[in-house]
Length: 87
Image (tube, rainbow, N blue to C red):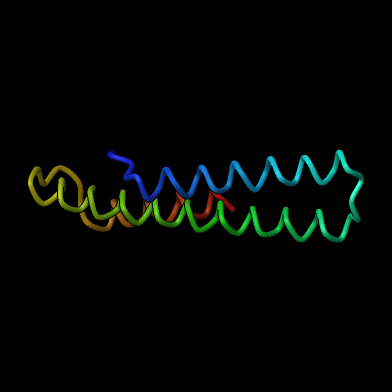
């Protein structure tokens, strides 16, 4: 799968968020603020997973149409399983 610059930029933003959280911890900031930022990072990760799975689903469906080696149902089930495992 090709990962677009948009997806890579999402991951870089998440990386920046995590570095910021570490800095907050080192500065002994309030735990409520740290938890808020951790929650925001988790949401960003979940959304990135969704983008990757949906992009992968489209790619797999296109390949399946070309090769016809897997049913559409199998491809969709695999994508759903990826989403479920990510939670």
